[in-house]
Amino acid sequence: MLLKNHSSFILECGTDEAGRGCLAGPVTAAAVILPKDFSNGILNDSKQISEKKRFALKPVIELQAVSFGVAHIFQEEIDNINILNASILAMHKSIDKLEPAPEFIIVDGNKFKCYNSIPHKTIVKGDSKYLSIAAASVLAKTYRDLYMNKIHEEFPMYNWKQNKGYPTKEHRAAIRTYGITKYHRKSFRLLPEQLKLEL
Image (cartoon, rainbow, N blue to C red; front, side):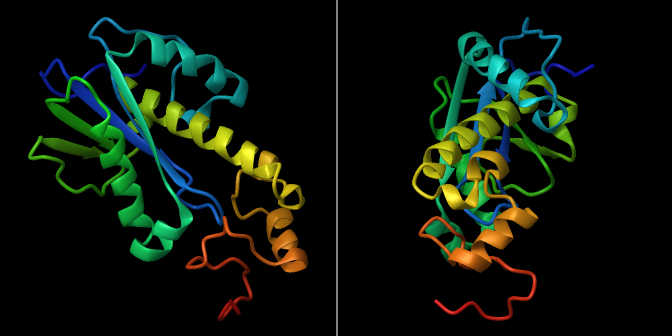
C-alpha cells in the first residue's frame, strides 16, 4: 500500500527519472503533485507494473494531478555533464513546470540538489513507497518510451521500440554491426569490450 504524503505540506511533489542506464536517448524526469484524496489501486513503481497498465495510468495521473511536469535531458547534455547531473537537471526542469510550485519535494533515490530553497527529502525506493513518486515514475517512463518509439522509426535496426535504448544483447549487437547514431551517449561504455570508442 503506497503512502500519501511524506510531509504535512499540501503541495508536496514527488519526482523520479527514467532512462538513467540507457545507451541511447534522453534521461526523462517527471514531477507530480497529487490531491490529498487521490487513490488508485493499480499505481505502483513503474517497474512493477506492465506497459499496458503504465499507459492506462498516464491519462489518469494527468487528469487528476494538481499539477505535473515532464522534462527530457538529451544525450549531448548527458555526455557534457554526466548522467547523475543530467538526471537531477531533468528533475529540476520537470519541477519548473509545476503550477502551483511545490512546498516540499520528495525524490526517488539518494541524490538530489536543492531546488529553489524548497525543502526536499531523498527516499531510496521511494517509487514503491509514495504515490506521488510512483506517479512521477509512470509519467517519466511513458513519456520516455513514446520518445524512444518515435526515434525507433529513424533507426529501426537498434529496435529501440522494444529495448528503449537499454543495453540489451540485441542493442549491443546492432551497435557492433551498424556503429553508433546521433542518439547514442558517447560517454557511456556502449560495448563491453570497449576501451576507447573511435569517434
